[in-house]
Image (tube, rainbow, N blue to C red; front, side, top):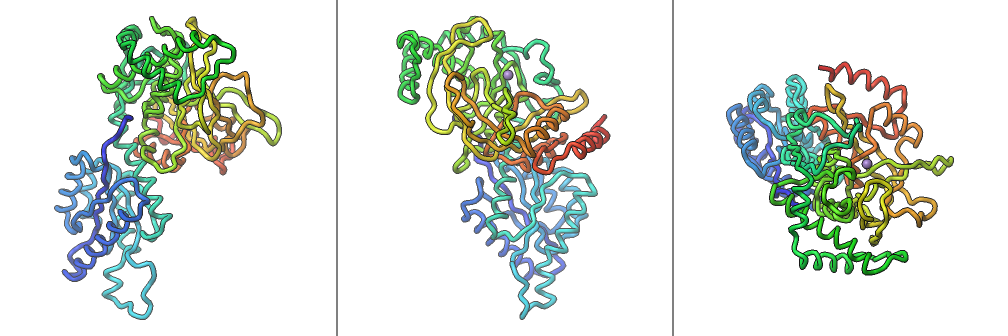
Length: 499
Ligand code: MN
């Protein structure tokens, strides 16, 4: 499994020395209790680490620079317990380069009506201090997340948890390396783009290899390894022969086992976390990688078909954002294929030629061997299943020439009304928000691709925050979308982002 680091988040409380040592001792004690309870809550994916109270320009600047260089620190959570004059934060914030959360909370939930005096109010003035602090970010144009609410509430803790996952997506973006087994499909526009700009903007390294160099790594896989993995496939998945000869079927499956091992070794040896292939450029590979790619996605690798390196990188980032999530429902590369336009049953059938990640499968997957209608290779083995139901997000990153735009659509996944016994690929079926027709019109007006990076386990808020941290445009299509407002938003965004 492709793991990320054990990230931690620093908890830094802002104050000043105006209120005396006793007040500062309370501030430190309250911060300690909050950090302890947050860590005990079981709601956060990462540990929170308490840092000494930040009271001077010098300490603030030093702490932020330490956070920059600590490889395990994925972001800083800040809280203004008292009033902390924001000019003290300017130099530190100018030098800070990681995600920042302004937790706008207060130690006590309720005003202590019977005992409140001026000392209490000076000590507990987040409402006051949080505004001064927030002002300087807005004045300096610094991206940050603001979460308001009582720190002990589960809803607030869960918002902190989702921000942590976004922060990890931001930090990990610059570690994504995409291996291109082939170039983008000829004449296709939306899957291509500026790789240099992507490296400047997102930190992605996108490298091409001659397909036969990869095919050589596949050929070098020993027969015994192929047999062992093929056996594992036969133990793990239903074998759906559909009248094919069992021996011949197994030989086809073994080809995918050899590809999975060869690809994975090549990816590991060369430090890649995402991969693209192209059905029209397979060199000496015997089959289009299907089952092999599905398994690699399940292990956490990003994938894009037909050379789609942008979607491959996004699938990787979204997989790492959801890593270790309790009850995760899955994240996959996906493609819009066919509509159901029956009133009341509208939706888009999602699939690909082969490559849909089994993490989204609802129940056990089966292996089929079927011809492809495109390309010139032998019939590839692939995993077939239908996807889970429930809300999810579908995203598309496009290159508009002068900027990147991330399009994020809230979708509702459903079961198709009837089974599709002749369709030999894994599928999902969803209705986009706010409804199929408005959603499709909005997506097309935004310029979104037919390929998406899709997840049940992330929200449009997280993806928007990720885009904001990257400094790119994000457009959400959700229950509130109207075409008139969307067209205006795109016009305004043109003015904001045009260089
Ligand atoms: Mn495709």
